[in-house]
Amino acid sequence: MKDRVNKWILADHAHCWHPFTDQESWESDIPVVICRGEGSWLFDFEGKRYLDANSSIWTNIHGHSHPVIVEAIQDQASKLCHSSYLGLANDKASELAAKLCSFFPDSLERCFFSDDGSTALEVAFKMSLQWRQQNEQKERTGIIAFENAYHGDTLGASSVGGVSRFIKGYGETGLNVYRVGSLEDLKRLPEVVVETASAVVIEPLIQGVNQMRLWPKGMLADLRAWTTQHGIHLILDEVMTGFGRTGKMFACQNEEVLPDFLCLAKGLTGGTMPLAATLTRCEIYEGFKGPDRTFFYGHSYTGNALGCAVALANLSLFESENTLAGIEEKGAYLERELKKIPWIQEVRRVGLILGFDVGECGKEFCLKLRKRGVLTRPILNTIVIMPPLSVTMDELKFLIKAIQLQR
Image (cartoon, rainbow, N blue to C red; front, top):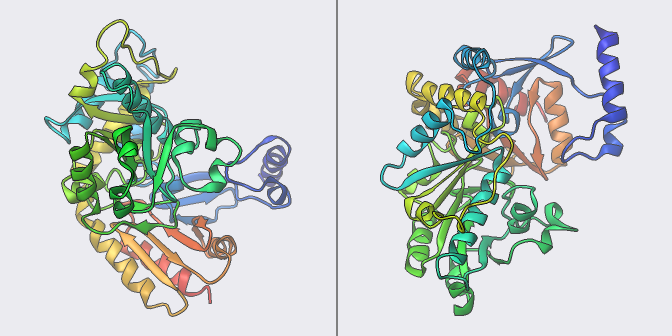
């Protein structure tokens, strides 16, 4: 087995290119090769287990290899993995679209499928802008975004983001973007900017890549009121915050906000396979009817039957396992215990999304955590903790102890 693992590592160093990774230093490292997952744990080929403290980049919900989800994959794979969604339908996509829209009855009535968070946002931007152009509002060509935001890595999504290291060299040439730092900045925008804006986009309640920074309570509801007053679409990027992370199924429900576009991905399939969805209002949908108004956008795997079947199984577990019930208790425990550690500089949390600051290099801190059996990734000197929602209190105690032993 060791020879096989060494062969895989050599092949990785010779041929693979990892995201968000300094490849020069990567090629001198010996990576952990993950072979199995069970519950909140990942296992390497040497048999060592690691607590998945960031849910495999914020995707896993009910734990790895959950039997209900595994069964859904196997059952659907035996029938149909994929067929084109262009001019055809499939049962699982229909059921999933209806299920997602049912969370927002009489509001978000249409669902457009894509592949990941970036494309979910691309869909929303393009729908908003095209709707304006073909519905007598051609002057509305701008997108208002918030500083330090992150909305994905495709060209349009990255151009709307506000983190310079993710957009340098190409993101500056994308959409027509106006950036603001706060709701107060938004209200001070020149009239010409407001009158030519098509949409405002925000990560509700908390900015993820901006070191887990929380928005003030009530800000989202105030933003909704402002966009409604000025006839501007509200796009909510719930790629990270969706599917229970904040204690509600969707973050916007914490402030009873209904957007014009809701962008979902990551937890949609419970951390098993790529799938995204953009929900929107009937009014937007109606504005695309007619041969010269078609929304010419889509992916080869749009409406993927296998992914949709898995997403349905994922959503069913929220009900059968009462997943939302324990989130606040678990998150509050983590926050309380971390605040007791004297060398932690600040703790920021909503639901079971948490970040804490350390006075050293975040990458080095996480490498030391890995030696203690915990996997997560930093954002600069902020350590992100976002375990599967199914994480147990005993597993959280293991996590806290591993962090305490860092000093």
